[in-house]
Image (cartoon, rainbow, N blue to C red; front, side, top):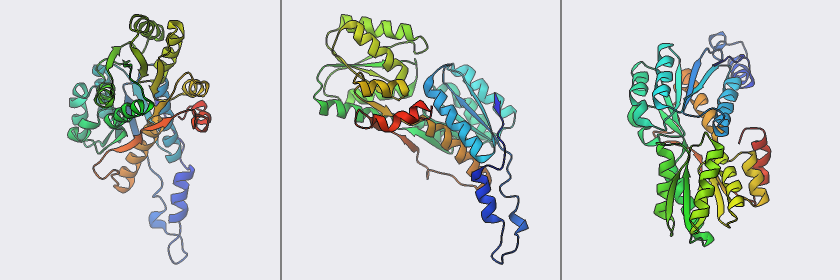
Amino acid sequence: MRITRSAGVLAVAGVLALSGCSGTGQEDTSSSDSGSVDLDIAVITHGAPGDSFWDVVRSGADRAADDLGITVDYNSDPDPTRQAELIDNAVSQGVDGIVVSMANPDGLRDSVEAAVAAGIPVITINSGQGQSAEFGAITHVGQDETTAGQAVGTRLNDEGQTGKVLCVIHEAGNVGLEDRCSAVAATYGGQVENLQVDGTDTAQVQDTILSKLQSDPDVGVVLALQGQVAVAAVAAQGDAGTSAEIDTFDISSDVTDAITAGDITFAVDQQPYVQGYLPVSFLYLFATNGNVVGGGQPVNSGPAFITQDNAAEVAEFAANGTR
């Protein structure tokens, strides 16, 4: 799906305004076209249709395209084979840059490396941080999942939690989600058990969590790894009649509302809008000025904790679809 953006937006206009005159006060014609750029960036993620998290990522990429006057083609597929095909198609079309999330790095390796070999700069986002540089990407934008998981484990310890933590994985084979749960388990003082659900089927998610809560009284915390799963967990907890705490990674307007109401204790925000906006901007800078952002290190978009103390501050942005 191609989204064409008009030129002459403020970001580019600012560059033109600064470059329009030389130090003598005369028009500098040598740089008068420096802000006019025709770039086509492919953003290819593993997001499933209707996933609110990836809707926010896409919004960030679209806004960057608007601001910079370039073109963004956004496509996604949760199946790594089909996602690899999307990358191959972008390479064959001769795009100027590729942004890709790598929930299944092994399944995308050949396609990402082929893009790099074709001279197309690649930036990875969200998942696959550990393989990003190895595959030839110029940088990675996202949340360090081990750091985020450790922060959650520490927070639960500080709360005085001792019950079992149910870590709900909503995408099979997603290395980032597995890293989160592993890091929580390595840090939390109690037991952590992973529960696999199908994140594309909200009813199934709610039923699976409900069944687990009804059969295992030791569960003291349900830790969702996605906002929609957290909302389903709140409903399941209500049906089960337990006092298990509900926490989550990622936010949405539903999540901020639930935090304000006290139904969810905290959310870990990795700022998906940033994961869409920054890589498009970075590829623009790379193409127009040779800039490489990050100094060889990933650019962290999180984590940050959202609680009742600060939920109101981000609720407006969440309602706008940008948080």
